[in-house]
Amino acid sequence: MAFPNPVTIETDESIPLEAVEHALRVVNDPELMLNIVALELIRKIQIKEGTVSVWMTLTTPFCPYGPQLVEQARIALETIEGVKEARVKLDLDTPWQPSERVKELLGLPF
Image 1 (cartoon, rainbow, N blue to C red):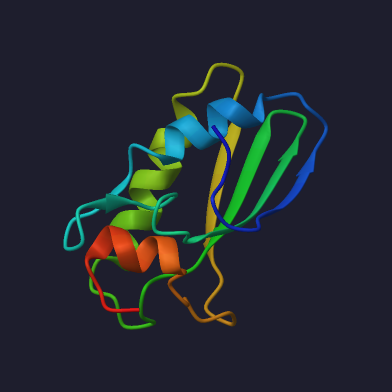
Image 2: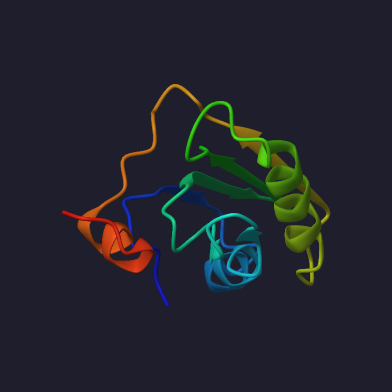
């Protein structure tokens, strides 16, 4: 597996990146019924000494599910063996722009 969109990754390899991706794929947007990786909401991942930090955006800055998605992502990351701490932060400076692939998944016109 790999992230479908460009994600900035900084890792000391203390936690496998594949485990992080797998954990984040279980977090679904309840309205769009797609996971946050498929929706290309993940912007940056930092893994350092067992701490996993993830920066993500939302489909809209006013997404009513934002706090729920952040909390679910944090909980999912905490289930990874070896994770000492999980942090999920919102990056709303970079607005979400669905790629052609995401538009196709959502059934949106190109």
